[in-house]
Image (cartoon, rainbow, N blue to C red; front, side, top):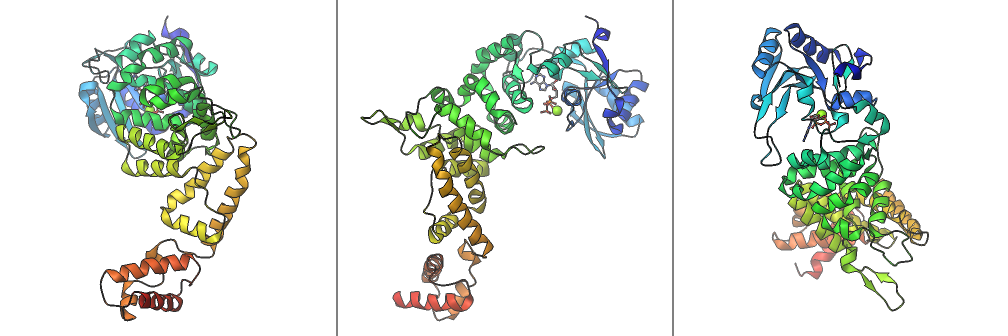
Length: 465
Ligand code: ATP
Ligand code: MG
């Protein structure tokens, strides 16, 4: 089918001037050049592209000559693969020569690329129809694969033969789920079947690349829908997801199986337009109950109990996130959130103060969000806990508003004050400070220098110093 039959024009002012300028410079030199891929998709969907990629018939050395001639800075991103990056004050633009990809022996990067001169050759290397549209500097869209139609039908569809395309590069499988999660699109039947069939090959993809897509999948606006569609695929990375699918909890507190409950919790994690979901909270929601099947025991009344599941789930989270090489900080925070998701301290000032002192502030800020999301995904009976959570949250706010401190270092005295009060230098100073902090939390003294020194003296006398 000729490209012209699939041509559409949308207002050219949707392409920013700094991008148009480069398109025109390349075209003046006799080459063709288009904005391609994700930016065109975003424009068609009425979204703001976060960056712009250009596809051109100019070979990398020709692109360099055009940029030099126009006085535009650039760097060589990977001329072997056809990419030169133009540097502009408004942002960098990757300019890639039309190309056809050769074999993929590592399922990751094509072993060789062949530079081409027409869009028809370039389009075949693109993953999905919605990512295979091109726009010229006048705003004309070239859409040889029917991407506009699929945007309208809300469909993710592979370009070419799906099995072959996912066989070449298994990462495309997760990209498909990520786009489904971001846009709320269904995955076309044959495309999904091929994704499931090729999912085993994800084991050949590096942890970091999987991690980046997994984060995109869980933080997307339509994450629950995408994970429900892709649970078999995700089970290759996290086998516990497959075990939780359809797992009946046999509990009065739940009216959903473990995976459906998990997706409801994820759905309840706030999604903020333009920012998405907090990745740590989204990951914690995904992992929070995955240890339940391992902990499941049924009593003589046929009721299920899953004691200890937060600890088991946190171990699963730690294992998977380590395998995927997530940053240490994220692993620690997700681990703690999962581990604590079922911990509800007594709703009294001392208990809440002590709990808040035991964990980093960011965990204490995020935990109630996870717990609320979790409670709201329980049966009517299970939702009774909401009042308890609210009481704890109120106390924690009162504590913060009243200027309470949560770390020894924030007390109004330090080791030097204790030494000045007559205690000899040594480990005993630290012991006194720790005990002093406990007494402060118990309400036995306030956080003023006089009150703390007075209490420190009492502690010192029990230690015979
Ligand atoms: P995002 O909004 O995440 O940037 P994107 O579609 O722009 O989405 P990029 O990774 O920036 O994704 O890639 C730009 C374009 O390159 C894609 O739109 C697609 O046409 C093509 N592409 C990227 N990765 C692949 C891949 N693994 N296989 C085939 N085509 C790909
Ligand atoms: Mg992009």
